[in-house]
Length: 144
Image (tube, rainbow, N blue to C red):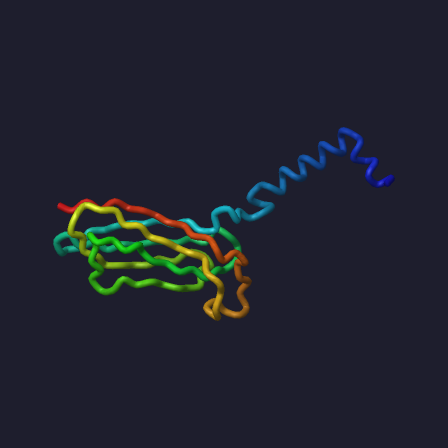
C-alpha cells in the first residue's frame, strides 16, 4: 500500500502521464491499426486501351506477414495474361503487376489481405499475428 502512496502526489502522477504519452509515439508502440499501405499506379501501354497496373503493398509493422494480393473482377476489364492472385511473404514492400485491356471508363480496385501463414514466410522470421485485415486501393481508368 505504501508503494501506491507516491501516486497521490501531483508530480508523480504527472510523470506517469508523460511516460504514457511518450509510449504512444512512433518510438514506443507500433501502429497496428493500419498494418498495410497500398499505392496503385495505372500506366498506359502501346496497345489501344491497354494498361499496366502496379499495386505496391507496404508493410507498416516490424514483422513479416503473409498477404494475398488481387484485383476485384470488373466486366469492363480484360486481363491480357491472367487474372493473377498473388500470395507472398511481405516483410517491407512488394510490387504486383497486371496487364489489362479496358473497354469503357471504369474503376479498378486492388486488394491486399493479411492471411494465416502456411509455410510461406521463412521459419526464422517473426510473423505478424493478425490474420483478418483487408486494405483496398481504387484507381479510375479513362479510355480514349
